[in-house]
Every structure is written in C-alpha cells, then in structure tokens.
Image (cartoon, rainbow, N blue to C red; front, side, top):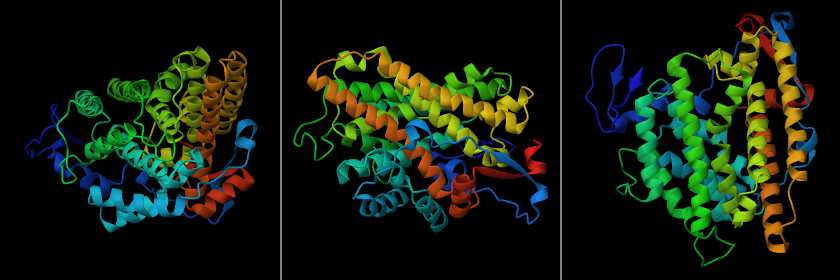
Length: 402
C-alpha cells in the first residue's frame, strides 16, 4: 500500500508492506498501476456461451434517457488540445496517453453541453480529467484506506479553491493540484461566448465551491467506510447517501451551469426541488454505472457497487440487477414529482431554471452514452455496442459467483 504523510509533504522512502513515497512520484506510479477509470482489466476470452452467465439488463434508455443526444461542434478540436495538455501536465508516458485518449473525457463533456463555447467545453473536459485523477486516489489509490491522508489532501485542494494556497506551477510536484488551480482561475472568468467580459458572480462561485464540498464530504465518508470495513453491512439507503456525494456529479452539474452562463437566482437555487433534482440525477447516474461496471468491479475487487451490495443481502445476480432497474425507474418518478413542486418564479428566473433542467438531463444522458461509446466497462467499443443492442451482459460463471 502507498501512503503520503498527513501534511501532504514529501516523505522518506521506507521498507515494508506500507511504502511512503515522495508526492512528486504519485502520478507516475499511479499511471503504472492503472487505477480507476484508466484501469483496463483483462477479460477472459470464452468461446463457449455455456461458460458465461447471461444477465439481462433493464432498458437504460427509457424515460428521460430516450431523447437523442446532440454533440458540440467544437468536440474534435477541443479533444485534441485537452488530451495533449493533461498528458503534458502530468508527464504521462505513451501508454497512459493512449488510454486517456480512449477514455475520451471531451466526448462526455460535449454531450453535457452541446451548445457551449470551445473555451467552456475545454474547461469542462479539463475538469473531468482533474476529477478522475483526483478521485482515483480515494477510490482504489493510495488514499482509499488512509482517512487522515484523505482529509489532508482535500484540505490542500480546498485552499486552492478559497484562494489561500500557494500558487502551483506547471512543473509542480503536485500536478493534480495545479490542474485544479487552473480550473478555479477559469471558473472565476466568463465561460466565453456568454456574458463576455464579465467575471462569474460571487453568488455563482459560492455555489461552485458548495458543490465541491459535497463531493469531498462524500469521499471522506467513502474512505471512512473502507477503514471501518463496513462495505457489505450497509443498508442500500446508506450506500446511496454516501455514493451520491462521492460520485462527483454535484460539482460536474454546477460546472455545466457555468458552461452555459447560468447563474441561478437564490430563490431558485435554494428551492428544495432544485437540489432534489440534483440528488435524483446523481442517483440515476450511479445506479446505471453500478450495472454497467459490474463485471469490471468484480475483476478489480471494487465493492462499492449496488449490485454487489444486494447480492450480499441474498439476491441472485439477475435479481439484484432487476432491483437496481426498479430503482432507476423510480428516479424518473421522483424527478417528475420534484418538478411538479416547482413554482413559477418569473421570466428571467424561469429561463435559468429551464436551462438548469436541460443540463441535468444532458448530464445523465452523457454519462450513459459515454459508458457505451468508450467501452470503458466492456472488452471493447464493439462489445459496448453489443451490450447496448442486446441488453445482455456476459460474465464468466466463475467470476459471477463472487
């Protein structure tokens, strides 16, 4: 296991099962280990279908997800720039660079905000790169069982957001922090093409910070659960409460508000239904991910997965997937109930609210399409296309028994 000291400063190398490393080596070692979204677990090649468990997936493109997606015309040019930049900043090797191009965070961002400017799309793509690199440390990386280290890393990142941290350079020993610093700088400006020449309002930046705080609290709760060894003893409700925070959807959603120049008036942002819709979209995304990532999570030993949690309660794999499908459909019912409780705020506020609602739907749809298009949970893009068409997830029986 790899750890940092609690201050986040460089530590001396030691021998033994627990290895302390200099922070400047953090990213490079993680790239070799291939944790998180960049990890491509080996898939067994089975010719005999009898050796596979065939799992039937629910229709993940129903209700809000049944609409056709639109893409941003700036996608191709922004992708090339964003991929090159993040690889340069973290000094990635060729293997990581190629895998990152396949992960394609810009595709995800371009479904989220098909009408935003190139500058805004680039910022969203870079935020995705930061979020997954940052998250991997807590997910399967060196901070996943280090509560003190996790709290310390979040504290250092919070200082950047609040403007109290020292300025990091591109050659910094903390490239992930440097990336976040550039994002904070950009978010304080206009998204380019909307309100040109005007900085983001203090009200909006507070909302952006608030959303990141929800995410970071979810990560702390996740690490605490790991340390306490309570992964399979939790109730589904407790699991959802933790995961909807650690998923990172809240700051991503507010980031997309910025992409469109949406600055929700306080009476809109503070309405209970507005936050409830953010919760519902987060729940929908994590439940869909838990189905599609089920095989990958089994191979990597990841236990924060609703399918695995329900199986630990006595359900078969197919029963657990069916139950998650019911939960997803219930998200849509919750969405319409929350929508029905929203009042009319007036022309300007309602226009911002409608933009917010469009962003919420695009976010869930983008996450769903991205999983299939990039094949990040499957053997390949082609296998992802097959799963989408047939709704059949094929898992080796020996693996499905776990």
